[in-house]
Length: 169
Image 1 (cartoon, rainbow, N blue to C red):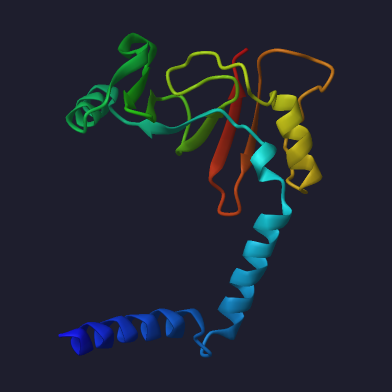
Image 2: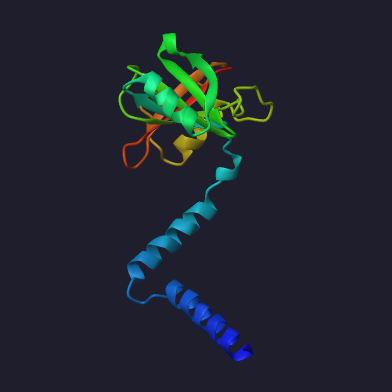
């Protein structure tokens, strides 16, 4: 019985090691090593983006509301009469927006937690903007760094997905 267990363990270890050192894909391995080096060299730990949600452009807000309620979400904010709802399930937030924009948007709210409550330890959007610029991320519209309070910026990711950083206070 012990031989059988050792054989399985040895085979699993061989598979794991063989998967990590696949000579057929040297370019992919080099690319992944560069990715991890870049991740380790950036100071992303200091960028506090706040609450995360996805903002969905929906055709029928009532139908979308019912669908997300079936998934266990409940209304946290907005209103049907305003053509938008913020839906919540535990820490997950989904914004439903009818007729407000095209496509879906990844949204971050510096200064808020997932309940829309103010948090004390957050990065002001102007600091986030400085960090993004220092990393070579192009901004379409810069925020005046001499201002305070609410502001927002949008950036596309490499695949064209829109990221909205929207500070409300």
